[in-house]
Image (cartoon, rainbow, N blue to C red):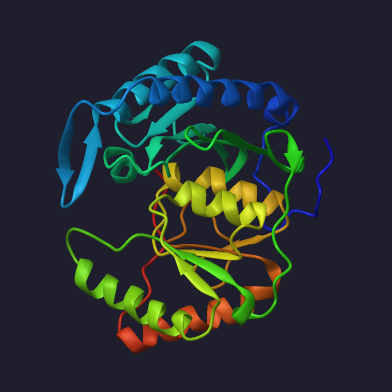
Length: 295
């Protein structure tokens, strides 16, 4: 299907054989998140345990990751998998790999808040080649493939055309937890203060996958996530780009799997959002984070 807009950002570095296989692999990804949806919709979390400072995992997260891993290993044994709960398995780092978040928004799920998602991307050369994000309780599936557009339940979607901050609805990623959380959160507080004085509304949804999918769909005009975990972000990054939006690191370079932050914007808000972010780092007196190594 043709792209509804011209995608922004670098295309993935795809081996020719993978580029030819994208339609079939997108079918695999879509069925994989459907497997996850059926588990999430069939049961409430029965156990919740702590895996870090204010960071939790439920039995549903684990059941979903196990089931999706099993499915992907059967369907694509030649492709490695990086999942939030069980790490990296399969072929080496130079080969394409799946990035899986079995439940993005675990805290929401554990509290009965219906904002959570299953996020799956196929990553090659530092960028996503295809994406599937399923919102089990909102009954929508987002899909994208490089150069082929972004879709919600098969219908083309596109980023918004907002140009003025006063017209913008902007989401902010969760506050930091764990070691060094205090200086990181000074930046978030400064950002909230600055944006609160300029934009129409600020939202904190608790799930990067929905943040990014809704920027792609034009429901949000920007999303500022001051972190970059591949299982959280890579699928949504491709959705935004294929819908005509921009996804950048904090320094304005194009986002990749090695980026430190994930800044998704409709094109008209690039300059005001990036300027505000730079001012927030300066006001908080915190240096921007360095780029990371992949997976």
